[in-house]
Image (tube, rainbow, N blue to C red; front, side, top):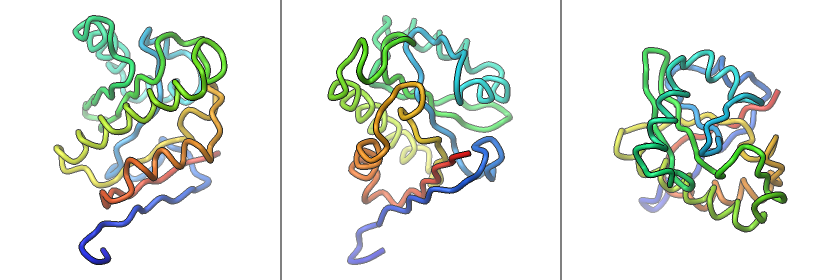
Length: 162
């Protein structure tokens, strides 16, 4: 802390996201149709066995208006934040939604997650390079959004790449 303001701690590591210390909560991007069949979500669904059904219920309970929201799921395996960054799985940051719109939706998800993390006293977050795999965003742009949202929270963020 400098001058009473918490600084962002963001570190990129070459490590499997699923093998990180349990003090970290995980976040990843998903679509509001909860397809959850490709990419980093596959091992997450295996570890957090009820997460897909819980996400489907979240979408249903929000009148199918989940885009821009983060759904916090907790079970004995830990906590995972599901960021509803797009409506359907085949939407990408350049197909089905503009890059700018995707960024806005992602920022809204991150802000929602940030608020929930602060409410729950969570200080450690691990993620892949969110939105940069199947969703085709540019990491430098996504990193700037993350820095904007979490810049003064003191939350430690670990970005795992393998």
